[in-house]
Image (cartoon, rainbow, N blue to C red; front, side, top):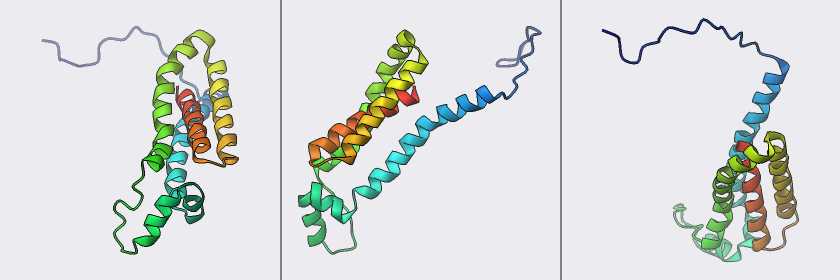
Length: 152
């Protein structure tokens, strides 16, 4: 009686599986998508607690934070706009990863990754020169699209 889930007889073909420079570079580029995503999670968490950032873009959150001197930080950062700033990248990355597969299939991986890199660059520029909250959110959405395409 055959065992369920066992390893069946192979076809006799062996794949050498050598680690070539091309395979190494491909693995590094693929890991960059996750690196960018994780880096952004860490950065956005730190930036949203910085006093100068809150004073400039989210003054109501900053006033609430300054008024509450207790050690309990629960709901100190309760703002729908701040939540939109933080979550816009993740929502855009989710949507982009759904669209990126179709774009990759039609245009190829190189153009898809180039497009994602350009979106990420545009988002970084907008966030770097932001003067208002809407610019931050638009920049984060472009960053999210870039991350979604890079993860594809």
